Length: 430
Image (cartoon, rainbow, N blue to C red; front, top):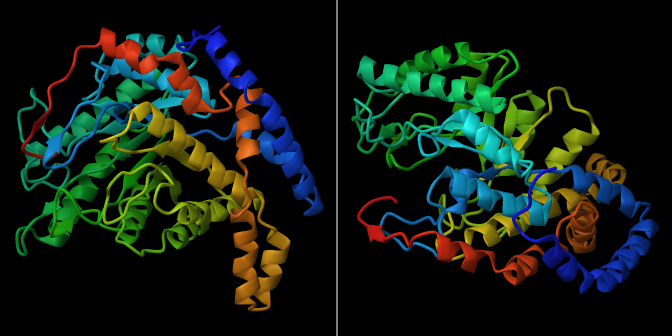
């Protein structure tokens, strides 16, 4: 039996104070959904099975290019991070896996596996880092990694990714996510074609090192840290990469990696249609890749993404098996609270998308009735599914109100007393 961080008594007391209201709200929503031909328990059962991975780096306090303001009780190492992730999993019952970032989280893989198993946690995709320099590496990635003009630097980056695969094999991971910061800051700085060909050659070596039951996720981003061009700048380039590499290569969609007003849900549809959607990094943004809490700026867009995902799920689309992970930077909030709420928001979008009357929607689409088609989507989006989400948590041992239970438990004050304060700083991306 796995251990728990938050006392069961705290959760039971918190839930007891809210259960009567939840029962009434759930029954009321069930009656309204029944009039629409929807069984509320069936939606709840699907929500109970839906999960999203927590990034190890997400439980720390982020920053900007200007400064970083540390938070109380920040994790000191990967083992503290695992404990924080266990709290999120315990209270939400929606985040059973952790995604590691190497070399940030490098430690004895067997010890990592043992630490996670204490809390019933598993490991999601491995994430390599060739976008910043580690203290012990021989060559710098200042001017690129997998696409670098220097063959030795490319070799170093390839070997790092192969090492991530080996670590992941011990941990029970089944995927490698590769995001690079390679690009240029000035016109003429690089030859676009040569840089991309070098990248593809390096990725072919990494792909060859994948176990048969693994997947490779490549991630596109239009800018940052390179501001004139990036080697993998958009979903079209990402799709080319996946097609070039082979059947185990897929495209990862980070919601914050696109220009404002880009139709991300249509990108999702295209990648599903051609069997190259690998999964998501969920967050939100206002101007660029702000890594804000999922659903904090544009929850309707999140719903529209899930409308495409649910459509594919219900149609049993070929090869459809997306991996879901949060990828956020928390500068002014408690990271645990933000990640809990973000996991709930992703579940919320999934539940809302399950409520779409797909037969009616298809009819309106075929009849070119734009108004009623969009109103059909809005009818699902406007439905308050909070009672479904809370009931799913209650039934699986989580908290009806995760943030309230977390605060009542006093976890942040407890770890703040145990973990030394971390100094703030500035002068670069932190």
